Length: 333
Ligand code: NAD
Image 1 (spheres, rainbow, N blue to C red):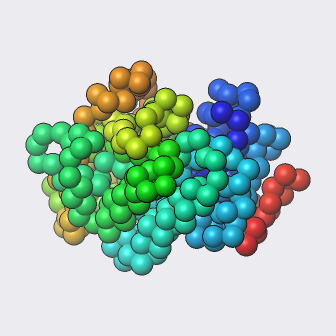
Image 2: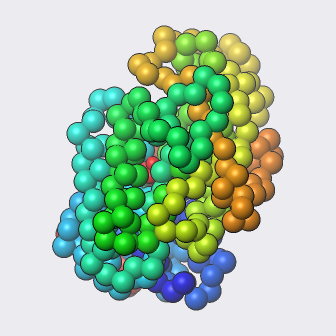
Image 3: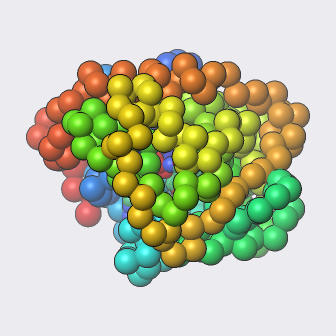
């Protein structure tokens, strides 16, 4: 594997993936294509940003000319770029449809015109919709409830259609909820950590009974890399194996780790379509050799420590970086 295009590589999961790829594969050349929305920041890439094997292109997956130009010199694609926050999707459906659906269509169209050896489309367990009981396998119907999940489901189908129509060697991965260092503080774990560390209250939806499976970002990245190297084109792989917790249980863990108590909790009415539970079987990717490694409690404690030690990263919110190394192409548009 020598030339990997990573869309959304300045975001939370994408930046972890880029760093682990550069560490583990000394032959890899990586291009990050990222629009640097509020959710992306080059600081997420750390020292990898200055690695001569990394090229950073500041541009949008919605820009067909840029996408086509960048795609031409790559053999592999890992597509993370998306609008990713459910709450924002309830107020900004059009942006989600544009980025997640149209953006994926533009990418697979461009990839189909070039000799791409593998295209991994990164998706989510939320596309299966709520499962009060049981577990979803890759063949289950998609029943997304919120606009974010609906646009991800649409993009999964667009990616798979490029395999069937044009023979683009696409794999789709669907992961459960991720956590780890440098996640944007709008997501529940970093939101609670950063507020609790500042001594501020946090809010819990409904009675805190919603169940999510929590997977450390490094395990998700390992699963994606496995699919990139060994996945069968046209196939979907669930990436699960994290820890199932209700939001109340998760809150209890975070209160303990942040040195706070239940007085910090304010209960608020549940939001619209807050799915009660997600659950996925991940036997299929296990057959490729995937096995999550991080212990949840240890990894959550490490995450709290990361936020303790990186105050400036999350208060105030990060702004665009002014440093421009020579191999960085800024404003490709
Ligand atoms: P994120 O919001 O942290 O990062 C998204 C990145 O995409 C940002 O760097 C942003 O600048 C970039 N981006 C947005 N619009 C763009 C555009 N038009 N062109 C180029 N770049 C653009 O998201 P994340 O949590 O890292 O999630 C990455 C992917 O993984 C998403 O596709 C998401 O649906 C999926 N996913 C996330 C989770 C999770 O728990 N966070 C779980 C399963 C799947």
